Image (cartoon, rainbow, N blue to C red; front, side, top):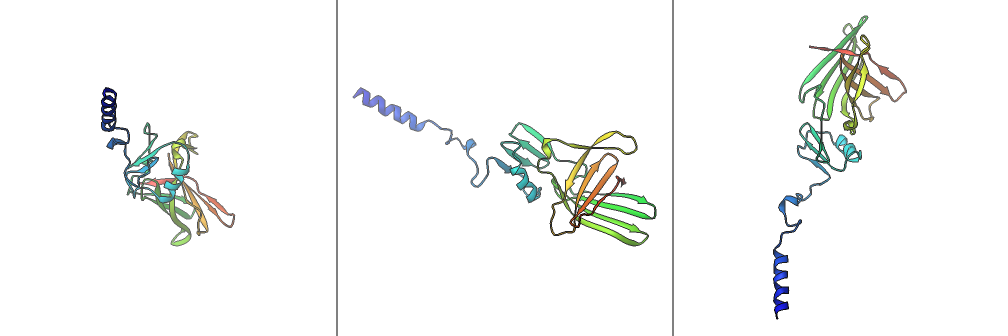
Amino acid sequence: MKILSLFSLFCLLASCSPTVEDNPGNRETPGEDPIFRVETPGLYDSLFLSGLKASGGAQRYRLKDSFLILNETDTVLFSSVIPLGKVKFYAQKRGKEEITVRVERVNYSTIMYVYSRYSGDSLLAGEKGFASVHPAFYLGGESDEDPETGEMFPVDVFYEEEGEKACAATLRIGGPGLKLSLICKDGKTEELPFLQEKK
């Protein structure tokens, strides 16, 4: 009888003890991915998010505003060279031609650009589109050399996905300004020198 009472008491205590599963702090929200969590949806491009999830550089990813938190221990900031919602203009004259690039930050991962090359009032060339940071940008930054001083400086690089357009752009922003490269499906490439920011 004593053994049966002890056994009943043990079962009662075991059923009342909280387990890891019973702790509300350990539960995930239904439908939430515990490995990849976006706390501020709408602030990142969907293609960027897909690439980030597949990048394999961390076991856990959490995005909140301008922060990318890896494994809940390391935090990386998205570039602020062009603040969210702001526009910057870059320009340079080459002889009779003027090159301009308008860049707007549409979300933390993506910019919209408009490139134009004029001779007087005549538009000689132009491109526009959206470009995003590389999904594995958190693994390390890039740098370029100032053509005048020879000094190295960090740049933020935005890539345009190849799609139906004739050309895809790469924009390198930092140091003295902006550098634009266009790679076209017909095999032609155009690489502009650094354009100075117009204040």
